[in-house]
Structure formats: C-alpha cells, structure tokens
Length: 269
Image (cartoon, rainbow, N blue to C red; front, side, top):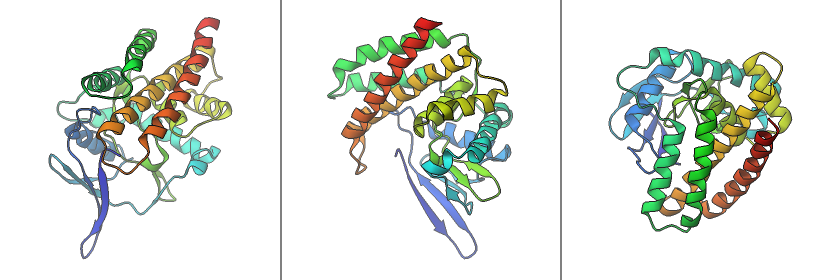
C-alpha cells in the first residue's frame, strides 16, 4: 500500500506501471527496489524492468494470476515457494549492481519507531517497550548468517503463470537472516504449526531442530513487529481507504501472542 500500480498497454504489449517515490517513514528507497528488481529478473524470478525514474517503475507484464491465501498453503505450491526463496537467498545477490542499501530489518524497525516518536500518534506509550524487545531480537540473532532477502512474501507478491512462480515488489528487500523470509511467509499467510514445520523441512532439507524452530519464531516476532509499526505509521500518513486502526490492533494482538510463544522457547532452550 506504499504505491499505486496499473496495467497499461500500447498497440502490441501490456506493461505494469508502479508509481511511488521514496518513503522515508516506511524505509523505502526506490533506487534500491529497482536494483533488486533488475537482479531478480537476471536470476529468472522477476519481470524485466523496462523503464524507471525517481517515482515510476515500468515492468514487463507477465500473463499470470496472483496466488490466493488458500493456494499459498497447498503443499505443492509451498514447495515451489521454497524453491523461489532459495533462489532469492543464493542467486539474486550475484546480480546486484551499484551501491545497495543493506536494508537490515532492525534498522528498518528503528526508522519506523523514530518516525512515530517524531509524530503525534496514539501509540507513543508502546514504543519504548518495542525498542527493548527489538534489542532482544537483535542480540539473539547477531551471530546468524545473512543473505539477500525479499522480506515481503505476501500472496499478492507471488505470481503464477501455470509454469513457474514469479516474485514482485522488492521495496523491502535487503541483507538479513534467511529465516526472515520464512517467517515473513508464515506471518503474511497465517501459517499453522504444521505449515511452519513443512517450510522449515523444505528449506533446510533436514529434520527440524529446536534451534531452527527458535530462529523461525524469533523472526516471526520481528516480522510482526515490523508490520505493527508499518500499520501505525499508515494510520497517520496513508491516504489509502483502509481501516488501519483495526489492522494495527489485529497485528498487535498477533505480535503479543507470538512474543509470548517465543519467550517460552527462550526459557526452554
């Protein structure tokens, strides 16, 4: 919801036009998104970038359908998504060109918190608590491997042309733990414990360990906290017609429940 996208056509082709410049409050830098989109195309998983400037991105139109919440959870689809995630983590980085922002998830969270503190918003009392909890997540994950991640595995960002899956909208991509994408996929599509276990086994190729489960649930907290802050910012700055207040409350409940579960894992390890 940080941009507007349209399908346009000329005499012979269709194109996707995405309109929206940098958005500092959300941590979005369009030049970074463009470079990541180009790299995704070269890795064979994203539409080709045809034109861009500071506020417009024109891409190849792929005849396809967005995935649905139901289809995302189908085991055969999940296998394809896991394959897509592995390409993001192992191949896209080889095609990145020019200066690229790290887009570390903890930096992105801190940017959102700073922005909210600067604005008149109804959630100021929660921000110091979020800072302390984010410090816990960052400390726990400091030694984890970092790879290039997409960080927005929402079902509408995955296209299916009946032959393969495509990935779009790289505006939140950056260098993070690989578990961030797995957690983001789980969070965005409200996976069950069985779904979580399936993607862990599919990604790692081994039986699930307590350590891998802990990492997934740590980053589910991180991903949910990022979403809570995104929605809080949208309450005060977005012009979209959407009930962000209710969405914030829903995400906050999910985050608090996830944090409690993550805490129980910390105690048991």
